[in-house]
Length: 217
Image (cartoon, rainbow, N blue to C red; front, top):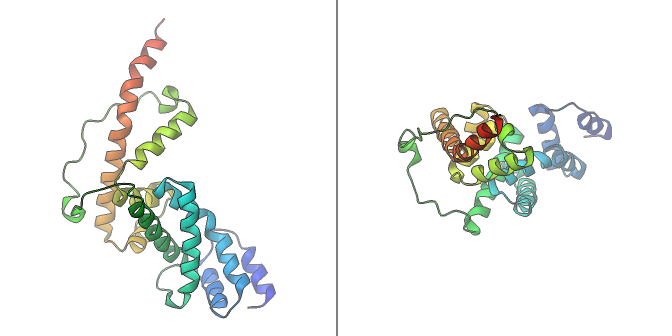
């Protein structure tokens, strides 16, 4: 790929098309380091954001991104183009993120058959979230609460929530990344949302009486 093509690709508006990424992948396979550097530039921030949401550690997330691009470069010949390059990258990053969690014993989730238990024990007792959460907590404090609640989710549910509700990926993209059926993705997302809502409700239950009392004359 000549310099003019590289420049055209680099200046393309995001989100990048699969064809643009594939052209850069092919150039990288041919030894064009600049092409792979462009792929890194396109996706390093996205991967860092996802990895940090999963590991809840900036240091670990930075390691994940480095390992992801290293493995991607080493295995470029294994990328067949059946899915988007970004999907392939995210899959590698998630695997690296989950390995980080296992290595540091971040959680000790007992093995469970989520495929057969998606509809069991769904949390039902959740508090009314009125007034708006930002009326109960400052923005920074609210972010801290949300981050802690997300951290408490089992990784198997957290990953689906991050991909769908944080990153805004489609069901189709999520199923490709996680190699799951759409029904499994939807069921895990439901569990994640309900568990997250239940975890957050305890904060709003505590804060609501104070908020209501402060509004009295």
